[in-house]
Image 1 (tube, one colour):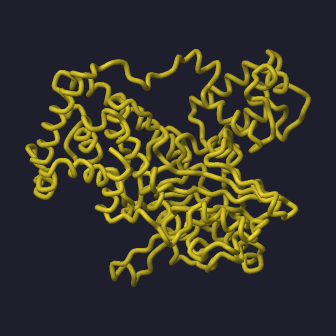
Image 2: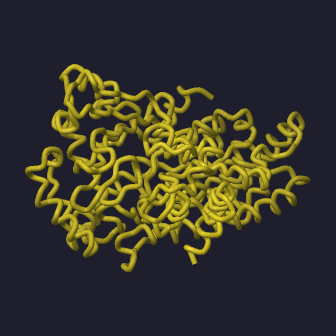
Image 3: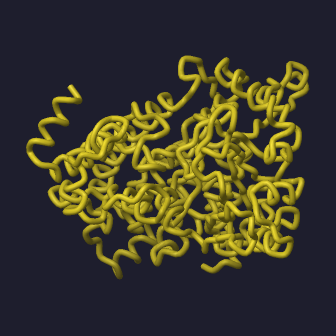
Length: 516
C-alpha cells in the first residue's frame, strides 16, 4: 500500500496533511542562509510567531542540550509540531551554540532530526547545518528515529510535569527565577507570553471552565497529543510496508483495541494453543517493562513526593505489538516515545490519533461491511463485528500460512554469552563519544579502552572506570549514561560486567570495594 492510500486515511480522520502555517526545515535553512543569520539569538528572533507562541520549557534535559531551572531548554513546536526547534540559554550549558530541530516528513511519515551549529565568531559562512538524522542524533533517537517525550500523566523535567496539576513548589521557584531574566535575555525575550508558565490556569482549568465543560490542555499535553499522532502515522506506515500486512490486517485491527478477545482467537485453530502460550509470556515481559518505566519516571521527577491525578488508562498496545512482532517479524521496542527504551507505554491525551482508529480506516476501506458492523456492536459473546474479524482473519491467515509456513521468529534473542561480552547498548556510548557529542573515549576499541579504565586520569568519582560505573546508576540523575536512554537493570549489569571485565583484576577489586 502506497503513500497515497495513507494520505486518504488521514483526510478521512480529519487530519490535515499539509501545514501552510508552520515552515519545514527547508524554509528554516533558507531563512538562515538568506538573512545571513549567525547566532541562535538572531534565529530565534526571526522565527515565525507561531513557533514562538507554542512551546514548553525543560528544566532538566538528558539531550545534547542541557538545561536548568533558571535557564531551561525551550522546545518550540508551533500549532502542529510538524517542525520543532529547541535551544537553551546559558553559555556554559552543553549545546549552547546550536539549535536542534525535529521535522515530521508528511510524505514518508518519518521523523527527521537535524542540528544547526553556529560559529562563536558569529560568521554566517561558518555555520554547520547537519544532514538528516546525523550520528549524534541517532545515538539517542534511534533508527528509525523517533522523538523522546514522556507520556502522560507525567513529564519529568518539564515545567508542569504533572498532568492536571499546577506547578510543584520546586517548579514554582524555578519558573520565578526564569521569568526574572526572561524579558531581557538575548534568546528567551522572543518567547511570546512566557509569564503564563507561572499561572495555574495554564495547566489546570478553572472552576468556571470545568462547569462549562471546557478543557485546558497544558503545553506538555498538547505536545504529547501531536507527537503521539505523528507516531501513529509512522508506526502504521511501517506496518503497511510489511509483506504480510494484508493477510494480518484483521488480526492487527482486533488487537489494536477492538475488545474482541485474545489475539490467538484470530489465528487458524491449529495454531491457537501455541500462540496463546506465547502471548502469556509476552504479557509478563510487558508488565515488567511497565513497572521499570514507572519507577524510573518517579525518580526523574522533581516533584516525586507529590501525587499525580490521571483518569486515563495506561495504553500498552500489548496485543498489537504481539501480532506485529510474532507474525510480521517487526521489532516494536522503538515504537514508544518514552525515554526508557524497550518499554511500552503509549498513553496520550484523548485528542491524539490512535492506532485503532487509523487501522480501522485502512481495513474498512477494503471491507465495506465493517462500518455497519462497528456501528451496531452489542459487545456480547457473539458480537457481529468481532465474529466478522475472526472469520476473515482466520481465512486470510490460513491462505497466508499455506504459502509462508511458520518458522523461527526473526526477533529471536541474541546469544547471551555474546551479549555479555559485547552488550548492544555499548553502541550508544560509541556513537556519542566518537561523533563529537561527548568527550572522545575509545569505546569502539576494547583494548584501548581497557588501558584508560584504570589509568591515572581523575574524574569526579575516581578513575574512568569508577566514573563510568557511577554514571550507569540511577543516582547519576540527568547525567546518567548512556545518554538518551535509561538502561534496564539487565542492561546496566551487562555494561558493568563488560567494563569490569576489561579492567585488570586489581582494578576490578578496587572498584568493587569502593562501591560497597
